Image 1 (cartoon, rainbow, N blue to C red):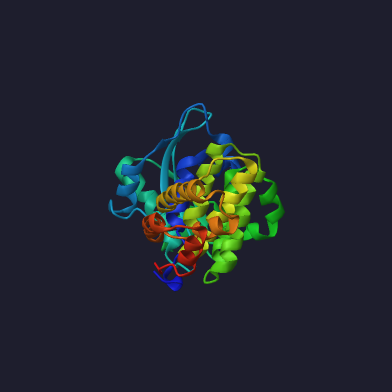
Image 2 (image 1 turned 120 degrees about the vertical axis):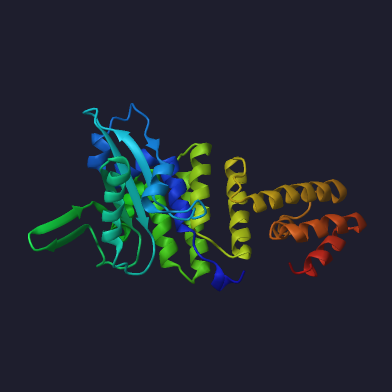
Length: 313
């Protein structure tokens, strides 16, 4: 995959964020809805019902829609449909689609759906929040609340100060959009946001969850991702924290790196940090080749020469 083919993964990132932080989502974007819900009763995800309403097949997992059953403080049960629109283009049928989801839910399950929409596109003027049709003396309409992520660009200081996980997720979304095609700048912002997780005083579990969402959304070419991981390793060594792997592949690379570095230190004594940093830039295939080659190394010079002439992946 070339740099130009790398695309940000908004849908799966937002879906994972909703799965982890549904209550935080509502308190951040739609506080009046949050305050009306009885949170002593656990919200129930309705994946099967959502599939029926939206007409999704089981293979269409990249859509960020989520449907929940919740109970209000007045003991009333309601369904909440959340739709995340993350595309960059104008969608003339968006409001109509929100209406269709509503009447399908009523038709199939006799349930009125409270529709909430997140607009993550780059157009400041596109803000669909209602659907209306009228003919002769007949008319129908639907109004639904929206949150426009672009509006948060002017509230960056508030996002940095907020303890709500969606403040971080919104920052990641905005900077991913802003750095489309500029992966060096995206890597810098990704590093800034990930480093900020450690500085917020979060628990390891909280860091891991948000780390995965940010990492999945802010896709990078492999070489930039590895450079980022090296920075994270140095940060965690300074803070004496365990390494948090962004992907399974990099976790494998990390394990291979540690074994090779341990073997080299045992064989040649403490090797220079510059050599360790170079080893950390190798992908899994190069690490496997190095693990075989080091059996023939007699001196650190052999290692240095191998790294200078290392095979391309």
